Amino acid sequence: MILKSVSIDCVIFGFDGNSLKVLLSKQNPEAVLKQLSEQEDFNDIKELYDDHPSFVDPKVWNVFGAHIPADKDLDEFARDLLYMATGMNDVFLKQFHCFGNVDRVPNNRVLTIGYYALINPSHYIIRKSIELNDLKWFNLNSLPKLSFDHGQIIKKALEHLRHEVRYQPIGFHLLPDKFTLTEFQTLYEVILDKKMDTRNFRKKIAKMELLIDSNQKQQNVSHRAAKLYQFDEHIYHRLKEEGLKFRIE
Image (cartoon, rainbow, N blue to C red; front, side, top):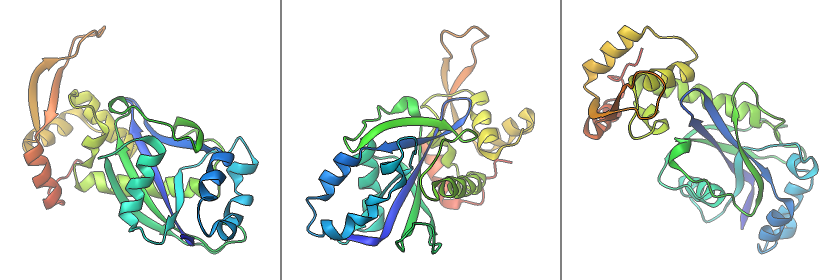
């Protein structure tokens, strides 16, 4: 049984070294309805999709979402959804808000629990589900036409991400295993939408003793190769638990 009144939407953020992006999808209506037809309550839930914007307009994109089965926990289904849609597993995933405006979904009363995930695109081969026609990364300042209130969901997810990275070192989930100090600083400038003083930034990071020199440098670059760093997982987990002691600005 699928709950008509409760759904989960997952906003997937990625960092390409220069900008923060969001991964969006286009539905494959025939594949979705075929999968739903296997449910005993198909006739009851089919109406949820009859007027779905991405079913009637091929130009519409979506964040990843679905109505939750009655026998699934929220966090469990959010991870299942992420894996089913993209093949990604074991990534940072956090619940951030409940969306419940009365008119957010026409003709139905739907509460949506929002999650956001953080990945580094170069680390994952994203496997497109047969229920999707397309997957694409978009810059946050040039989003396409979106279903329902997905624009507001993305905006709210970004607000929470900006708050969290100020106090917990979760930004590392958006970086490759080895990175330069410039990449590290650029990540936080992009997320927080503000320039940071390089000298002060690096002094704060050094004081945290969070980074380990990998004894390697960049390869195949046209400029002077910079040192590559890794984060210390022990310090990372300690800072994550302590929370407020991680101040990036």
